[in-house]
Length: 164
Image (cartoon, rainbow, N blue to C red):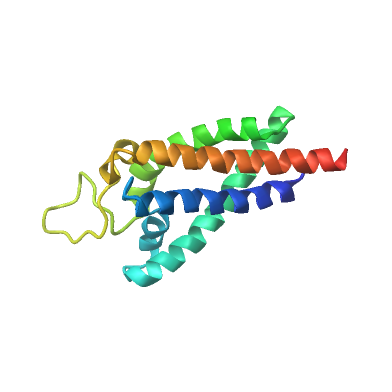
């Protein structure tokens, strides 16, 4: 198994994940904007937050592809179906622990149950399964993460077949 194929799959998967979420937002299925959410951790400037957020999102996509790679190596196999299963776990983690427990701890501009009424907040807290961003958000987010995982698993599997 090649770590490089996992990283290429991670880039391709992040591109697809981001595109699915952006399209879903434009179609008004969800209000989630992960790059903006990530970018506002770093800056209050909304324009720069988008650019920084997209860069961070792709870096994080690469890091997650390395975690998937470790999982594939540990199991001794890879494939688009196994990657998709990892994507389900990844998506559930992102919609629960990541955005509701970990992100609010480091995000200076995100509201939470502990925010005071007179504090200035740029972002609404995502809520459980990110439901505060729309009823379709959990479904759209999970589908996007399944596509991401399938891409990573598929790229690793294809690289293995090409070597054989």
